[in-house]
Image 1 (spheres, rainbow, N blue to C red):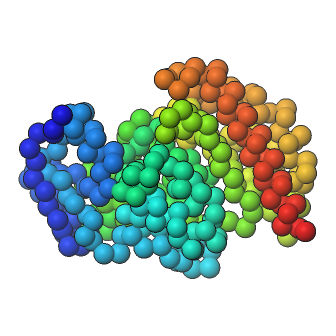
Image 2 (spheres, rainbow, N blue to C red):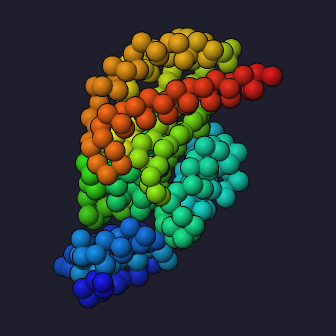
Length: 291
């Protein structure tokens, strides 16, 4: 099915793109189009104007911001992130995640910004970026505002981004401990995914802080606070035992939706399995670093 007729604008820079979005016709930003064009062809989404941002320089760069943070341009494709030497070196988990998104065609055309802005509950990047404490930079005629990845997605296919705001880059803190991401998928999308970050004390043996996000259970990635608290202050070798008493009740307390990927009970079970695997993998990574 073809979408209804629409116009297309090709702005040269971010400012022109934002003004196009503020014009009299309803406009939507477009880059890879792997999600948007499909929805338009199915006539789930319609716009009078696509604002093609592929020609805007500076939206597809990956670089250090400072010694503690690096940034990924919102127009970076999944393949570009997967193949980035910088990402492979300082955050290999993200490179691996991007190398397993959907299929080759999607990875070569789809962008991380488009993935985030579409707000699809069964997506890979939002869960890991939330666990990492990433921040998303939205540009508009009023300037820039930063939104925590945790707060960006509001509901299924709904984010805090206003239609005239352009996601330009993602700021990611450089981790000092293991980062692990696991997923179980049916087809090309995760049925459930789990991301975990440990920050370690100077000894490298004790967990100073833990961040855990479980995704695809509901509309947005969710935090397991009691599991995070149980991990703080214990050695990496004690981590699995430390969470054994709180994992089940923590998973029972979060929102889970029955969908075509499985029942709520089944998805809670999968989340527990993935989190235990995350802990085992992180503990292995810590032991290998100490050798």
